[in-house]
Length: 365
Image (cartoon, rainbow, N blue to C red):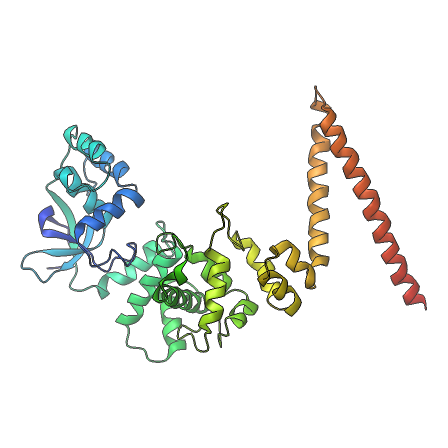
């Protein structure tokens, strides 16, 4: 068997990869019914089925496979989505969701390929470098959790004991930076700690609902890794991690209130949180239930928030000014809002001038 030429393999001889980084770990290595469920719900499989049914399987995109433990059969390492689409076209009864739609596509299909092109490799390691190019730096980018799982697989295939050297090698393989690799792997292990703790009993939180990118983005802020008592934000061994702090942090990021909102909200708010954890009073306020915008007032952040706010206000008012000549039906409510803006601006000008005068007087003294 060789990767030098494409072979056409019977679809029944091709099996899903139990270690596919795209699949949630709860589905990895489990029966194929769970794989179909995930593909139908999360991987836009129906659109792909329709394309193959109409135009056939594109031979220029062979699946990449390795021999399985069963004689004359193979595990598809790259191309599981395509494999699922073809298998469902051939046998719609495999579907666990949207059975009527899938059956209709199969019934009306012009093409139902019983064989598909495949490149057969000797082992998984031979394919891993290609996956890095395609899904981390290439055109079909994986999400951060999928990337982290892939990097872990690639790391396991390398015989490098020194962690810095390992991360450097992984970074070169995927065309990235060492710090990014270390950060992804650190985020992956933090996620696993959360999973080990059964997501700290946060309602509806699981692998498919958790926003892994929030964890990795938070590692950009040293104050947040310090809050977790990590020795480093790029240490996959998680030396020093405080589980109680991790529970608190996980609740901030992922526990939703009755309105479906979390304490932190969007990833851009991590910057505010990173400031809050630096100041005891601000942290106390936030832990007592104050929203981010209130707790941050007890840090040195208000100056920056004020400057950003007035710059944004100026930009929006300039935008409104450009449209005023086109307004044909002005509203009384708009006039009231503008009057309030005028009063607020006057007050801010007075207060800022007062503070600037104080600073000038102090300098002269």
